[in-house]
Image 1 (cartoon, rainbow, N blue to C red):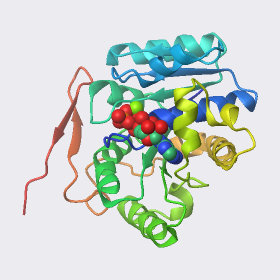
Image 2 (image 1 turned 90 degrees about the horizontal axis):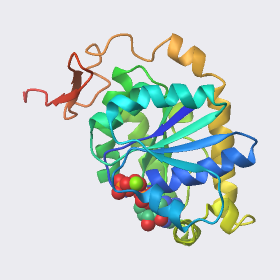
Image 3 (image 1 turned 120 degrees about the vertical axis):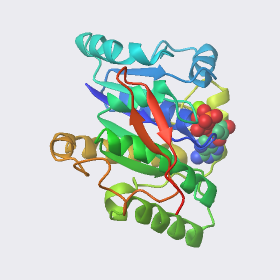
Image 4 (image 1 turned 135 degrees about the horizontal axis):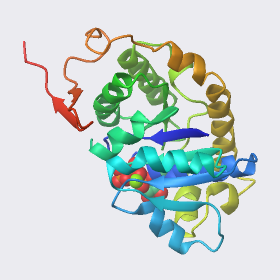
Length: 256
Ligand SMILES: Nc1ncnc2c1ncn2[C@@H]1O[C@H](COP(=O)(O)OP(=O)(O)OP(=O)(O)O)[C@@H](O)[C@H]1O
Ligand SMILES: [Mg+2]
């Protein structure tokens, strides 16, 4: 089973919407999919209540300690892809989801506030040596310059090549996403021939191709030791550390 976690501390960047869209794209690609919601805001559970179809099941798991065991039992039950939607901010449940992820997606709107807000999440992902990619979401249709500058900022922040860390295609801002959500559908059901659905299918294919390389990526972590990365983690990013019980603490670096 592959566990994909959507995380970023910035609210409204599209974690829940993308989790739903990707879940349906994965089902259409032949996977047995489960959605896990660690966000008590309940966007996925509310969507599920508006939905007339049985699949995908949405499972709320709000306690960090339950994540690992639940993922193990889903794998035993034959689920092939689990997509985890996390809350904005940094929490023990998000930390736990990242810890047991095979791949992390960091959605970001192409704005400086969203890009800056990815830093804390990126720090946690790197502390657990997880492969990741940004998904540029809610991109204005006429905004090529803004998009290019956002991609450059993200690749600077991660100190990696854009091709490796910005998922393709970028997801444009389109009403279909909001309309599908309110109808209890995903875009590939709501407007299967539309551009939003096409982008989401493309994004799923990009992710699937990357998942094929996940073993190599985790065997050979992007960074060997957290703490040896001053050039990669921005100075202003909070640094995560973990207590004996796995709880996450964020400490701000001393100002120089
Ligand atoms: N590509 C898109 N085009 C248009 N609207 C979008 C797009 N992606 C997301 N949205 C809308 O933006 C809003 C916020 O998205 P969403 O709830 O998925 O963000 P989130 O990151 O899960 O937020 P939170 O941190 O509060 O959980 C929703 O109304 C959603 O429908
Ligand atoms: Mg959400």
